[in-house]
Length: 251
Image (cartoon, rainbow, N blue to C red; front, side):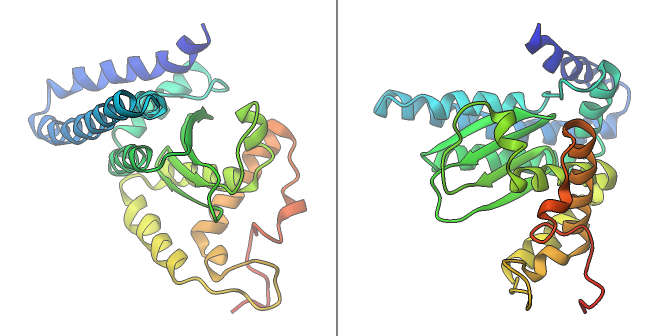
């Protein structure tokens, strides 16, 4: 029953998209390439996972490849059915570029990194790389990759609601739905460049220039609203590290 609630809206969304493809030829052509990219990356992940299982005995890569593929129709259990249905329809129409890129990226990360896990939460698919030397994250549509220095033990929902990095990256998924096909040029690429060239902000503890970019502040605000609504989380406790707005004296 729990799996049905999570995936039923996504399955119906897939059926609706397939029916629509029979009516518009141009859209049909676009989706041929879309499904080709999705299928190729999924096949790469599954075949690689199978080979790793055969030769090393570790089957987590194979299991994760299927879970990442399933992330395409994964929805939040907190959503009503039609709200979840709309989310998946947007994921594979309005958010199509970041959806296919995010899926490909997570499949590749799953293949090349040994210590990892894949979890569903809030309609997003998380690939967590554990025991890393740094903490960082990247959100591409509903696919999220997070690096952490330790390991997650126990329930993932508990871990995400206690980890500011997880909450921040989840906040980006809201802007993905808002900006749709414009998300990558307006947020994705600028964010990548900003993160690579970020410098410490004088007078702060661990805050970088990247953290004051409008899209980073926007992700924090979305996350603050969501986690306050569902978990009564007080974002102000950690606002010095994950700011909601620029300080008045920041240039």
